[in-house]
Length: 245
Image (cartoon, rainbow, N blue to C red):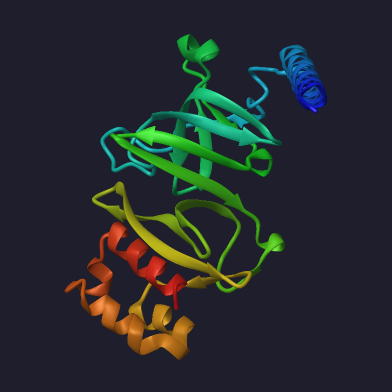
C-alpha cells in the first residue's frame, strides 16, 4: 500500500511538472510572438514615418503689428499634432484664434523665419504648452455630430467623462486710433446624448437637467459665485455632479 502511495505521488508531481513546463512554453511562445509583432511595427514605423509629414499647408503671413494686441492664444508655444493617426512631437506652434488656424514654425526652417499655416482638414487634434499652461484642442466637424449652434473648428477640451465639456476661443477685432484691437471671449459647450449644447449661461445649463434642476441648483449655490465668474475647475465639478444625476 505504501509503495502504491509513493507511486501515485510520483505520478502526480510528474503531471504537475509537465503542466507547468507546457504553461511556461506557452507563455514564452506568446512573449516571442508579441516581441516579433512589436519589432515588425517598430521597423515599419521607422521606414514609413516622415518627421516632416505635418508640414502640409501654405505659408502664413503675419497680419498684425507687434504694437497691436495679438490674435493668438497668448504666444508661441511647444506642442504636438495628431494627424491621420500619427503624432508629431516637440513642434513650435501658434494658435491663431482670430482665424482659427494652427501655425507651425518648423525647426528646419527657423533660420528663414518660415511660418506654415497647417491644412486644418488634416488635423485631428493638437496640444500646446504656452505661458505655463497646457491646452488640448480637437478639430470638430459638425457633420460628425448632431449639434446646436456649433461650427467647424478647433475647440479646447476641458473635461471628458460621461459628458464632455469643451470651449471655443474667440477673438473679435475693432479699430481704435487706427490700431486693430483684438478682444477675447469664450463659449462653453456640453456634449450630452450625441449633441453639443451651449451652456454660456446658468439657465442654458439647468435646462439640460429639468428632472434634476433643484439638485443641480443646490450644488451650484454651494460655489457662492456668479455663473459668469465660475472658475473652470468649479464648472468641471458641477458637470461631474450632473453626471451622477
